[in-house]
Image (tube, rainbow, N blue to C red):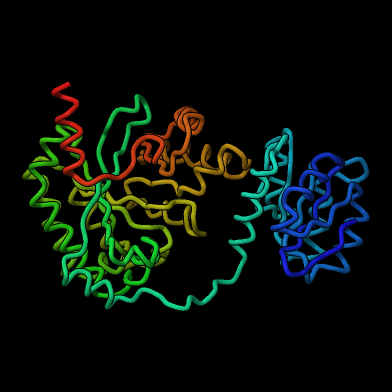
Length: 392
């Protein structure tokens, strides 16, 4: 058994593969403190005396004295607040459900598993459970407002591709603020102003830019002139701004461009009747609203029950996990079937490899987006590349 250093996250790992345990201890020692056992009962005894300092429990499905699911069930009773992860070479649907519902497993990794994949999964679990640290400095709505005053913002276009043939089917319009992005992340910037009137001002400024550029979008994309635009729940629940969103959609249609709105799942609450009413009003006018980052929160399925959204866009972390995590993979495959039955579109972002593309195509995902397929670029760069390709 290892000596525990509480300055690093403590991971209890049970596996009969001594080579894997040795590789994990040797390679990940700088990041985590591993307490390893090949005997499940001994591991449970240790956990009962050390649950307060344990951050994660990992167990193999197949063990000589105690199977992984039984072990994790007992671990859940001993230390209910400690996350649990399971390793498995092959697992039946029944066992998977038992692991989720009774052992309350948060991750299921396919064996053989590399140390790098294991580290990435551990980091994801640890970060999810880690209390947010208060930053020494943070972006404020007034900083965003000042950036708008100085016109220090621009748009870039992220290409979207039909999953069936990987043909270009549209773009997502993204906002960039280079001056603020020197010190803050893009998500941090928009999170800071999502419930503040400045988000309406920024969105209206971006819509004005898009109206001016609509003829260029049409000339560049042709029949694929479909634009996805991010909006906030705050904007949807502002009556005057909802009218502005409708007028913007209609102006873009007159210019031959179709607009789809996307709203992050973390901003949506299933019983928010005011917001659902706004989405319904847009739907009645033929305007599609998608749930962005679907699967990143706890409201995913409840939001679909209202039948007001036109489709979903899978969270990039969920998409990333389908190659290594049984739970992520099973959820994506299942939700694709649900969307198909409900007549909803389902797209995926964060595509990083051809293997992910192929798996999502099998599952019936309708649209793909990610750096592997195409990265965000300014409109003039798109036009320059298109002109070069045509002349060539």
